[in-house]
Length: 389
Image (cartoon, rainbow, N blue to C red; front, side, top):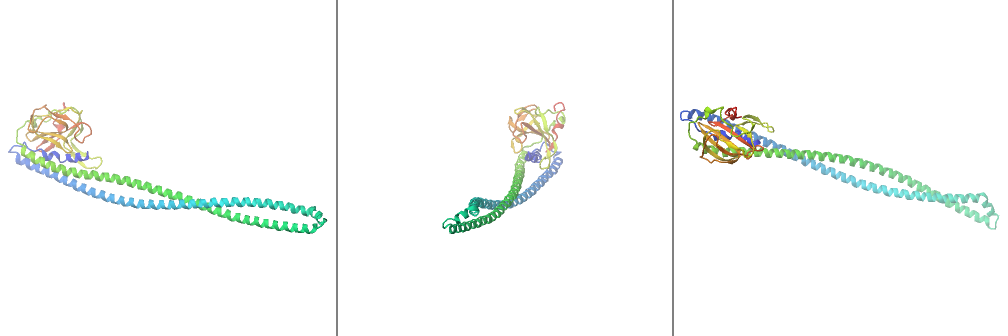
């Protein structure tokens, strides 16, 4: 749609001339030159502005690419940090497992030694309370009791020392376990923070990537617009030259029919003649004609007699037929699916010259219709009978 509206600003002003009497030719030629030179300047201005916009968009594109590169570097850094934290957590967890196993083994050993110590204490207690006296009064009993008592005391002292060492080791291991658990908690929190930072960076990268895609799409649209403007200008200039050679002066009663002509097709006018502000680019363009929505394949009629001067395909307008109605008046019918006349054919008012189609940029089947007076676009609805609208 964008290309079509810009093409509309330059289309038929270059195409449709002629039908001017010899007496009026100089006046109308000067008027036409002023009008067309103004349009040409407008086209040049649009091209300059479009080039400037493309340059700005390319600058934005480079900036976003640089931002994306920096975000990718920071993401790689965060991933490296998370990997190192995961490795440290794995190592710390393994150390905690080993420490827990050592503590479990020492606890078991402590309980075993405590059991032995308690058993020996009971034996020593019995020796002190009666058992020793009986053994003393037996033959050789005094010496055996003394040895056994000393031996038992030495073993008990050794057990106490072992238990004390185990307790000390357990305290050391408990401190080590507490240190490792604290370290694991710190690493877990640090990993959580790094993952949050990584997620934020990924979200930022996604937003910049979407913006980059949008900017590239916009750049593509503007580049396409520039191509269409240049191509249209070239094609239309060639067509103007051709139509100028073929146009001839003829008298016509077309001017007297203003407000009394029929609609070329029965339908609803969905786009009107005049200034239009593009909803996306905010550029002001000028609709040189009207768009009439009608069923596909509906017959399109000539609104006045004349001679077909052009049948062909125009970019942005699809299949087109142009009729010279005499006296410098031309009628243009576009978006056609079929054309039943060829260049040079004479047509009468009401003749079916083609069928409504969708060969133009308008969504759905429609007819694009223009009226030109000495190359100047006129509001078609001003020429149509109010009864026919």
